Length: 142
Image (cartoon, rainbow, N blue to C red):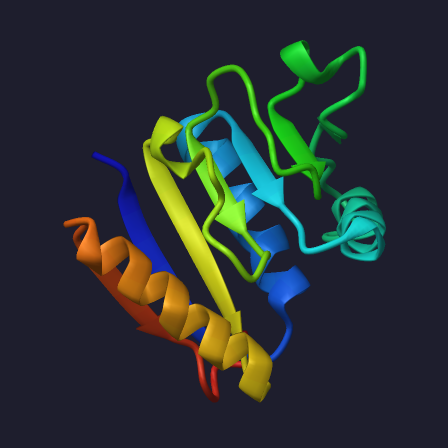
């Protein structure tokens, strides 16, 4: 069963996603980031190229010809094929394919809409019997 972690009170969701990608790649070898939209996909793509300055995370979009051979997929497409270990969700809804992953990281921002969507996702997983862990990042500079 998928292990689910909620990261709450996140001031910079894209930066937290970037850090989780680095950790997932180091510990599990692969990750998929489901972004909220094309703009978020572009922004996270740039971050993974530039931060931190001396490390590069090999990544691409789901439709890329290299997707099958690339350890990190960053996209807003609500579909996914193939094996990857960690899913990072930046979308408001539960990903329809989340149960294919060993781990799911749910990132919840600080604004009212993000908080409410995070609560809905938490209820969704809890009602289906998933064990949930929460990590409050308030005041930690994300």
